[in-house]
Each structure stands twice: as structure tokens, then as C-alpha cells.
Length: 166
Image 1 (cartoon, rainbow, N blue to C red):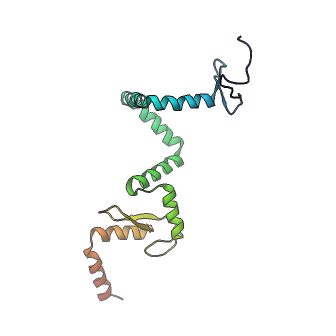
Image 2 (image 1 turned 30 degrees about the vertical axis):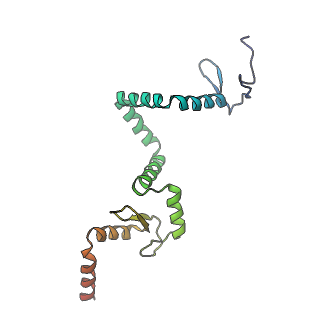
């Protein structure tokens, strides 16, 4: 019975602008609720097959993928910055963005070392163990990095300051 407009899909979901995809070329409608349900089911049963197909596509089309990635970065600079920050926190320190934000909130925006208010706090961590110690300002972050790798400088700096104080 072609030509008859139906207001529901085969499974009974109501076609609305929010739940319906209409193909601009053919005019065919598709229920997004059913399509999403099918996609999840298909992904569950064909997951490895889909991943392999995706890997092969990316491996066989490197120039196209690089161009698309570059264009996305140009079109979405703020999202790119946020993705980079989130990835760094997870990869380097094992922190989620919400955990990092909670640390800032708990610290009241103050550097853990100099106790000054800072608009940007850096994750201070032990370079040997990787364990997070707290959040510090840029100046204290650089100081801690130098002192951790050159521990003898702490003693020498104290001697220098006390003997040559003005």
C-alpha cells in the first residue's frame, strides 16, 4: 500500500521530528529509536568485525584520515583543547576531568606550595612513582621539577641564601 503516510514505525514508535530521520533524496523515513536499538544490538554481536573493518579503512586511507582530523581540529579548537587536556590528565596522572576539578575546588584555587591564588593549577606528581601530590601554580611547578631532579640544589640554595643574604 504505497503512497499512504504512516504516523508510526513497524514497532509502533511515533514519527516525530526528534525521532525520525528523513532521507533528503528519497524521502524515506526511519525511526531513530529503532535504528539506535539495532545499531547497539549489531555492535554487540559484530563488535570485533566492525573494529577490524575500521582499522583496515584507516590503514588504507591515511591521507584522507589526516585531512579529516586536521579539519576537525581547525573547526573545533576549544573541543580539541579540552580533549587534549582530558587525555593528558587520564594518561599522565590517572585523573578524570571531574576529579581534577574536584581537586581545584578542594584547594580553593590555591597553590599547595606557596598558597597563592592561581587561575591555572598544575598537577604536581612524583616523577618516579607517578603518584599525585597536589596542585601547584606554574612557578612552584617549575621549582618542584628542578628540585626533584636536582635534590642537591635545595641544600646549596639554602646555603647561598643564608650566606649571601642582603
